[in-house]
Length: 306
Ligand code: BDR
Ligand code: CA
Image (cartoon, rainbow, N blue to C red; front, side, top):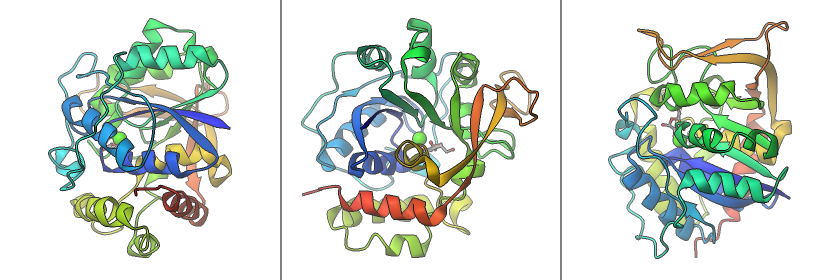
């Protein structure tokens, strides 16, 4: 069975990605590490702990970087609310984060099980860049490395850049330059995964998961201007879904470089699909939407919220 180590910034779609990973019988969640992104680390860490308890998970949660490598932080509280889960306030978790910093936790978890861990990063890439600097051999020891981030067309943070990359472009640049194959789920793909009214209809009957989390979170998230017309994109769940069911996605090999100094293009993932480009990434281009929502609905149905 695949084992996922999920680096995240919950975050509404992060919360759904955690539920998908936990609910799927095809993967085990080895750990959750948090990073500052959608909201600050003082919220993403308690959110991860509270979500884990709400979902009935027994999993280590490690607190990570409080700020990007170089720049000041840039939150997305307009999309995710001031504390990260819209208007939802979950009971405070009984558990504490593990004493290890997220960066140490990433390295030690991967080092303990070479070839086994699917490292999935769905927030700014600060922790991953720091882990690479601490132990470059994680590139050899991971089973696969998957991110939600970037775009080969337009951004959402700016016309050129997607939020997770724009929030810490220097970290993203370190990550894409490392000698591993980054599997990239950018906006071009994740905008195909929208929780439309028809999709949300399928979540009725999921009990507390639906009533206390999915429904209020998706109401809040879907009211954001960018999502009003076509429904909210459940970005982060796409990266987790790939680990569970790669056959749902079409990927193309590409060279991806991160713009760190552009006046108007900082955080852009400059993507070259030409066959002669020195590929460092597999970029997701299309999604089997029906299969994706079948997987998500089935997995959510297995989350025992008590
Ligand atoms: C990404 O940015 C965050 O707001 C979401 O959680 C997702 O990881 C989408 O651009
Ligand atoms: Ca996220």
